[in-house]
Image (cartoon, rainbow, N blue to C red):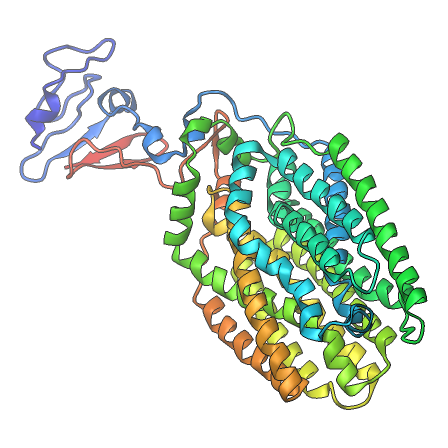
Length: 531
C-alpha cells in the first residue's frame, strides 16, 4: 500500500479540512496526518482517525459459540451444590460397595455357591464388561437429557439390582446373583462419568477439582466399606451353610434398603444445573445454542486430540491396575496368609482410605496450582514406586508391613483417579465433561478386564509375585506416555481470561490489518502506523 491509498477514504475530523487534511512538510494545523517523508513512509495518526480508519475486528471469529451472545455472562454459586454432591456420593458409594462385596470374601462365595474362584471373579469383571459397550449411549444420554435423568437411572438401577440380590440367597441361585450384579453394573455406567460433570456445572473454578475429587471419593469410600464390612457380616462358617446364607441375606437386605433411600434423595435433590452458571467457562458454554452440539462430532474431536489419546491409555493402565489389585487382593493375601480374611478386608480398607486422602489432597493442590501435567506425572511415578514396594513385601510374613505398603500404594494409585478426570476436562474443553470422563472410564474398564484376567491367571498358575510384576511393567509404560502429554489448559484459560463487558476475550486477538504490511503499535499518547 502507498500513502495515497491510505488517503482515498478521506475520513474527516471535526475542525479539519476535508480535502486538505494532508500537507507536506511541517505544519501547525490540527490535521490527521502530521508528517510525510520520502522513501520509507512514516505516518503519525491521531487516535480518533485511527479508530475511524481501522474498525475493531470481528471477535466472533475467535470466540466460542456462546461468546457471541451479547448478554452479560453472569455467574453465581449456590449452597445446593453441596447437597447435589453429597447425594451423588452416597449412591455412588453403594454401587461401589456392591462391586467389591463378592471379591473380598471370594473363598466364602466359592464355597456357598459351589463354583470356581474364576466364576466369582466374574462378579467383579462384569462391572467392567458392561461399561465398555454402554458408555456411548450413556454419555449421549447425559449430553442430551442432562444430569438429572442420568442420575435417576444410575440410582434407580442400583436399587433394583440390590433388591434382586435379596432373592439370590441360596446355594443353587448363583445365576440370580449374577443377574443382579449385571443390573448393578449397568447402573455403574450412569454413575462413573458424573463427577467431572457435577463439578463443572455446579462448582466454581477455584473449587472444581476439589469437588470432582470429593465425588470420586464417594465411590472410593464404597470400595473401602466393601473391603471392611463383608468379612465382618459374613464370616467363614463353612460347616453351617444355613448360617452363612443368613449372614449373606443380612448384607444384601441392608444394601437394598440404603440404595432405595438414596434413590429417593436423588429424585428430590439432583437437578441438571443451577439457575446461573458457576464459572465463566460454563457461562460461555451455556449461552451457546443447543442445536450446535453434535455428540458424534464431539467423539471425533476427542479421538483427534493426541494429548487426550495419550491420557486415555495412561489413565486406563493406572485405573485398570487398581481394579485388578482390588479384585484379586483376597487371592493374593490368602495365598500367603491363609485364614486372614478379616485382615485382608482391613488391608483393602487401608488401601482405599489412603487413596481417599490422596484424592482430596490432590484436588486441593490442583485448585490452588493448576499444575495438572506435573501433578499427574508425579503421582504416576509414586504409584509405580508403591506398586514395586507392595510387590516385593507381600511375602515377608509381616502383616504390619503389608498395611503400610498397601496404604502408600492406595494413596497415590487411587489419588490419581480425580486427577485424570480433571486433566482430561482441561485438555478437551469445550467438549462435554461427561464424554471425556466416559471415555476415560471405558479405557479403564478395558484395561481392568485384561489385567484382572491375566494377573488372576498368573497368580493361580505361578504366584502373586509374577502377577504383580506384570502390573509394574505396565505402570512403567504409563509413566512414559504421561510424560509425552502436552499440557494445554483450555478451560482454565477461559476462566482466567480478561473480561470485556462480561464477555470472555479471546486469548489471541485478531490482527487489526489494513494490509499485510501494516503494523499497529499503541502508546498512552498516540498510535503509529508503519508502512
